[in-house]
Length: 105
Image: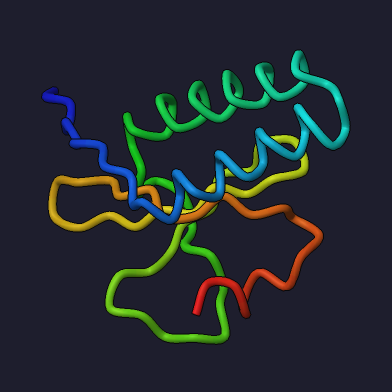
């Protein structure tokens, strides 16, 4: 049985989200170790999901999209991605307590 191989890309918006989150945890909360652990956990979760990104149910959103969003939960955060052909495109990193639908528009 052959295994699907997906490429991985990141939108600049995801990178901005990640940098803002790391900056907040490192500087505002003054906990650089926690920021490092979160980045490691996010990286690990994305790598695991890359093996079969379509195996999970799409995120239930109030907006209909050409490419449905999928969610990866990592601690108090959600990583959102879409799959386009053979590419898993990571789009957002959002704090789970926020109004996610509004931020995904």
